[in-house]
Length: 112
Length: 114
Image (cartoon, rainbow over all chains, first blue to last red; front, side):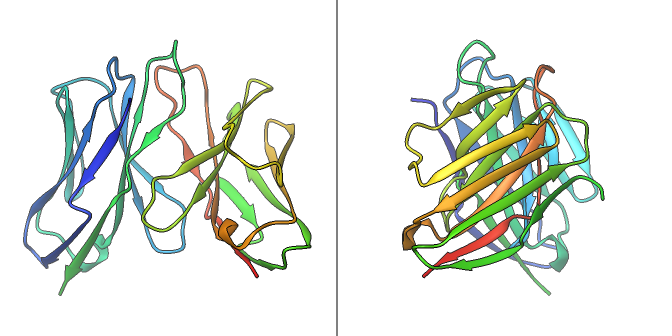
């Protein structure tokens, strides 16, 4: 069964303390892997799409990487405003179910 | 208006009420989605309208009824809901047919069923 697992469930960091969030998946023939940020009571905000193993994308303090089995969201020197829930989703091959398979998210808390 | 908008933002309804959620996308996309988000659970896809075809999750109860009059508007009609239907309901849109279909979300409607 296709599955997406995010870890840890929650992560508390001090401001400036770098770390990584993990998204592992069991989908074969990946068409795309997506990272979103979600603030409480709001809709997910798109961050990155990764298409193939070895690809990396960066935005401010965030860098997303992809291997054949997992993706990492690296957060460098985070600030309190980076606190949010980070969601990962995988898109299966076009000739199967084109729906996204979502992880349950990692809640990131950055303490000043 | 830009992006994806949803109204109302908050809704409280009794189990016998009938209400509708509205979504509008201003991105020129050809696919629209309804998701249910419950605490600490993955997003649950309820309905997709893509290229005028409806695809649904067979586990969605019939008390939820979608309507998509055109590619920019999407409704979710609610009737005789249960307390367990309380959740954040998210609308999204994408341009189906590209290499991968990045979905863009609205702010959501927080639904409380009493």
